[in-house]
Length: 359
Image 1 (cartoon, rainbow, N blue to C red):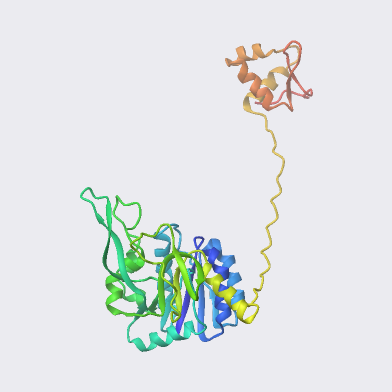
Image 2 (image 1 turned 60 degrees about the horizontal axis):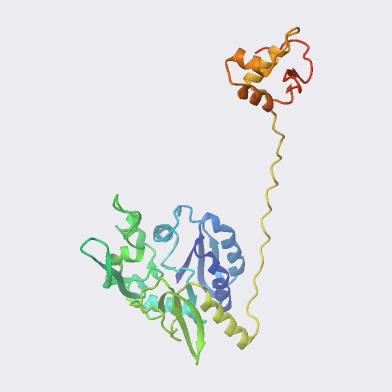
C-alpha cells in the first residue's frame, strides 16, 4: 500500500479545509496510512484536519516539518519535499504519495486505483510526466521566448520509500551560485534525470498547473488559467472523468464543486469536528516602571539639599558646565524629587531629605 504524505505550509493552508472534506467524502481508506507534515506556524490547522481524518485511515499522524525554515517558491517547497523524502526512508514500508494541497480527488476509488496501478507498473516512481516549459536566453542573458526542453515528472507523484537514500541530487535542491537570489528550479525539475527514466507515466493524475474557477458547462467541467500562466502552457484543460486526482487547482474551486455537486445528489456532505481552540496564555502583568533618578539628578539633589544655599537653573548649568536645557531635562525626568518654582526659577526638592544623599 502507498502511504499518503501531505505537506502543509502557510502558502496553501487555506486549501486544507475543503481538501479534507473531499477526503472525508470519499473515505474510508482501509489499509492506508496518512501523514500530515505542517510547518510549525500551521500545526494547529493540521491537528484540526487530523481530528476529521481519524478513523478513515488505519493511521493518521501529524509530523511537524521542523527543517522547513524558508518561505517562497521554490525554496520552501524544495525543503518540504526534502523533509518528507528523508522521513519516508525510515518510516514508510513501500512508497509514498507526495500529495500537495492543490490536488483534488476526482472519484471515490481514487486512492485504491492509484495504489493498484503503482503496484503493477514495475517502476519505482509514478506520476504525470509533462514537458518542461522554460524560456530561451537572449544574447544579453535575459529571459527570452518560451521554449520546451525535455520532460519532468510533476512533483506531486508517487516515490519509492528509499528514494532519499538513493538520490545524489536531493541534498542540493536549494543550492545556488553566489550571484543567484534563489535556486533556478523547483525540485521536480531539478531531479528530472534521476526520476523520469525510471518513472511510470500515469493518466490517473491530471496536471492542470495553476488553474482556477472550476465550473460545469453542458456536462463538462471547465477551468481558467491563473493570470501568471503563459499562454503557451495550455494548462486549463477540461477535467477528465477517468482522472483519479486533479492537480493544480489554486483557489479550491474544484473541491467546492465536488462538494456542492455531491450535496445536490445525495444530501449533506460529512460535517467537520471542531477542535477546541488552544487556551490563550494570560497577559503578563505589566509592573509600573520605576523612575530612578539619573546621575545628574542625584548631583542636583545633593546641591539643593545643602542648607543655606539656593540654586537657579542657570547657576546649576554654570556649576556643571552644561546647557540650561540639560539641567531642565534632568529635573523633568525626575519630577518626583525635583521641581522648578515659578516665579524665580529656583530648583527645589519636593520633600526635605534628612541628610544629603551620597553620589
